[in-house]
Length: 213
Ligand code: CTP
Image: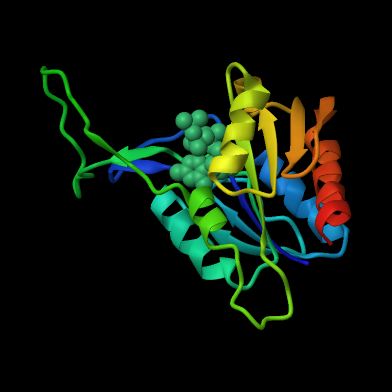
């Protein structure tokens, strides 16, 4: 399969030197890229992380949610499966300044505007043109939830027209080990408890192969 994977937390610039981001390390996305590559798939990794590109993987570096969206749109047409492991910022500064914001004694308010939901876009556009050899693309998302984890993740699976969702809690962000809950559109939940991201990634790739290939 040709697998497109996103990783890392996007950076939304306020001015040329300051940005809003999140605590994502990119480890989950990179572990998925390595696991998919080792399993014999052709992998493109779109990364907003500072981690070194894995060997044997096509690498595209991005900063912002907007750049990640452009890159996904560019490579989505040529992939069989998209895994959105990136922690994409939901908001971006409405008017980033071209020059560094000067300090004053007054409070500073930064207006944010919503970014595009990349995963939702992919779910909407996963059907291939009629007459092509392959079926629809497989679209896999993550869900980060504080509470009612499975219920909210299941809602995202349906609303975004996904084939599979991996749910976890904020404790997973940046952590070495984590607990995840996996569900495909037509199966029940599976829990992987306190495992390394390498182990989790291998299981996710194996589930994708078993379910859809
Ligand atoms: N995602 C995306 N584009 C965004 C925000 C998120 O593609 N602008 C993707 C993430 O990569 C992840 C999934 O959507 O695979 C779910 O992200 P999450 O932060 O859990 O949920 P949101 O859809 O952003 O909703 P909320 O923050 O309200 O829970």
